[in-house]
Amino acid sequence: MKLNYREKVILGIFLAVVICIAGFVLLVKPKNQAIKDDKALRESKQTEREEVENKIAEIKKLQDQIDTTYTETTKLTDDFVDYDEIYRTEKFDMFMQHFAEESEVKITALNVGSLGEASMDYYYFEKEIANNDLFTSADLNGDRQDEFDKNNAEGASLSERTVEDIMGADYAVSVTGKKENIWKFMQALAEQDETIIIKNVGIADYTFGAEPDSKELQGDEESNVTFTISAYSIYEMAKPNTAE
Image (cartoon, rainbow, N blue to C red; front, side, top):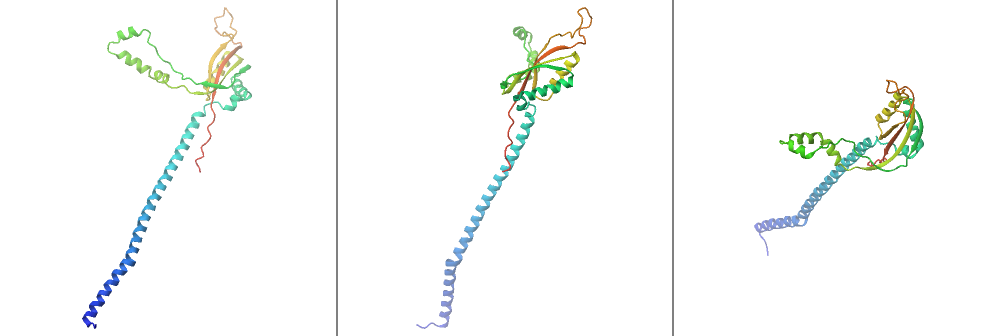
């Protein structure tokens, strides 16, 4: 069957269209789908990367927070007596000797108690109402109760706090010296930065040698004074390894 020129042209165009369609189906469409898949994969990996970066940023914040907490905690615990100074009694002897020399008193005895568990109570003044019924009857408007609660707020708050258990040891320190030097020694212990508390003071001769008939209440002689002291310590916290 012979085709004329017009039919050949139509057939050629038809074949060209078929070839283009076949090429699109066999080559272009899969490639286009591959491009779409690659784009979706890239977006997915980008999302994963952002999530990882966000987690890394959170880790850095957590590291900074841990370091800050450690630094602040160390500042709070610096006031406690070093564990080694309490555990090794010879070091505490030297610690007390330092205050004695500065105050010009002589340590005559130092009895060291054993280190153990202790509670560090809060120091506060809590007011009490002498007669609650009379107080309530007189306080018609509630003003006195409000004033009482306001003045007693700190003590009431501290009384509700939990007392923490730490390490502590009691010491009996006997010193000999004149009144002004004994007072210096006592003040030095009270003003030092570490957690050492004077619990009791016993003065052998509170007149410091004053004559019985003298108008002076205190003399200028020496007297022996015994202090009961409590020292508190905690274990030093290890520095967290946040570098890795």
